[in-house]
Image (spheres, each protein chain N blue to C red):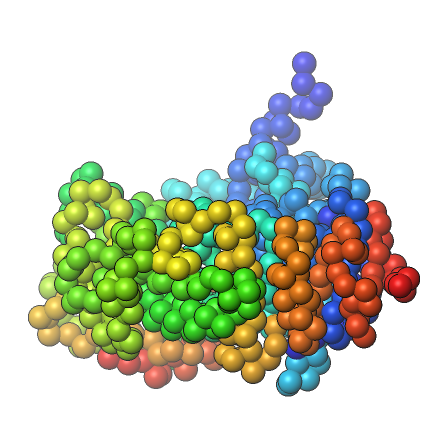
Length: 199
Length: 413
Ligand SMILES: [Zn+2]
């Protein structure tokens, strides 16, 4: 017989599978929920349930969203002649925070890294090329992270677009090399955006 | 440069050490296992952020604290350079194991109180370490010699540090891609970016190794005869995996003849090439080897396959040197490195000599004693004071180490 009730044990085990959460923290979370009022537990349970049922991938930019097309793709006031390519949904959040960009996005969901078994076909690169063929834009901003994998991804996309009539640019240097876009502060990011260079 | 003060917490058998270091020679005497080498290791770690003895930082934790909740190791050094005084700090904190994984040490580096990445921290304090195990540098495989070149150049050249780390990442990525292409096919054009990066950063590594070995070769030309009483001539030979003599894959110089032939001198008198010429050769040969690389799933050409060889009177010491010859060659190399670093940085590195005298004859001891006397700062360990002449170190300090405690003693003549 276990010394601890099954549901408690189950939740501890589930929490400790999250990145950066050890068994100690998992136990703390669990007992916090157990001792607290029902409200937080119910709220969490609902949010978790909706996480997969009520979230969709936008079929145009592949960002995660409430609906497809997403609020950004569906916004007719945004500049549809520019697409900014980013690695992760959180990068969209970071760029939106700058209020310096008014075009559309394309989310790749990762960067090329053969050592981690991530190849071009695992990313939304083919979808990007098709999107550009269906609706050409004037400028494509490659805003992948300023590290080796981000550069490899940008270089690969650029080769896929060789011969196409689109201006391809890269975020300006000044972003901390080796850093992630989502951690860059809004000022640095808007400056990098303003000073972007032809790739 | 000079290390003025050293503080250690929980480092090996030093629970706590707080010590002022004078300029000149410090002779550290003690029986085996008392902490002589540990002190040199600590200074080396403070300079290079790695141990010469282990790649597992956990081993640096004093056994007295390993069972504590969050055990830590801390090294602090105050130093003096041409540009003023600086404070270096390294803290290793053991985080509790996560998800049943092994406990990991978090390493934090600070210069003058500010957090630094390893790549920006290195080069603050420069050291040259000689230890008895350095005989392996001559006698063992090429990876030790590449590591030696990398650590030496990383201390003095920031671009070398960043290009080396980029190069190593790129090799890992390219090899993974080669294996993927070999197993499941795919567009070999994906190699383009990695090849380009490899050539850009790899050529700089080759260039710096070429320049460094050329200069070290000149320096040992005078050092080695004085260590051996003029009997032996030592030459350092760079054996780059990229054939620098030929644009494309010409004859492969990776195989050195074992006995020196004066005509052969031409072959390893490498042309003094610039970065662009090296890149041109590397790029061409990488491309020529691509189909072979695709079959094997590894990158076959590049500085990750370089070697450095030591010839005494034309004989390759790696294959044919006696232990005595290998040891002396390693010592010559380290002493040349001191002069090389001084030329490159304008600062004398701190010299660390671990048990250097024990296997040397009278002549070599006298020569080493002379060289010690010329250093701005040097720490020498010994089990036996009789290995040093009476009155040594003149004007320096004599320390005794016992069970992780250091006491200054005056020498009885
Ligand atoms: Zn969208």
